[in-house]
Length: 333
View 1 (cartoon, rainbow, N blue to C red):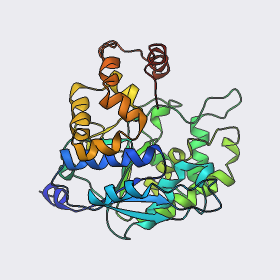
View 2: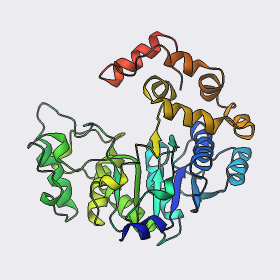
View 3: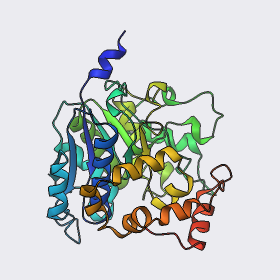
View 4: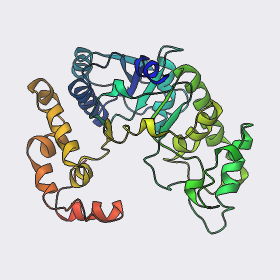
């Protein structure tokens, strides 16, 4: 009986917009939301980093793109890069959280995400934050002299006074990456963006500036946000998402990431959802300004690429698929 209340709870969305690719991806994100989840009643915030000493260029979006986003119902929220900026742009998702209204539930999405279904019907429980399980074992990286998964992850939980054992998936074998709490940071949610962002920032800066002894040979770029996110979610009382959230990375959202890969392996329904959202002239006018969108979506190269691949017999590894796309002359980003 509790589920209807969770359906009805309003929430805000945060994506990041900045000069270049993300500005146009933000337009496509809003277009897909309005096309496929027209009843969404929350506010969409587009976090925009501001010029400052941590950027070697002006990271702000063009004024006309900001006007389009505003016309589509988004609110542009500027934020200052205090800890990351140009050296680690993934840190934008960490620092932008502080620009949202405190105490209002939020869902963050990477900007290269499509909304393909009714987002308002997803039964989020904002008291129990979670994040995307659409991930692979990218970190920690197995090294010749590394101490192992357990030692590395346990050192991080102990750094912040968190219980490690309760995060383990005991159905998975010891020293196998899926035993440990690990997310893709493509979406995550919580009850209070300011509190979430404060904890996210504290942990990320600590790990970046002072790695534990067990992880000193481990790469932090680009994995820092995904290293720290499980710690933040666990600290705030959350964990792995349950089956109620299967629509994320499922029927309701799609993290397309790179359009050539998307066209090669996405379902017919996902391709239709993208092309439907991108079709209106008021959207097309702006998306065509970004060359990969123009060539892949509007000039038909995506469909030509798609015809080269059997979705039931794709290469097992993404690198091999990338190489095949490049060899066929369809790689663009």
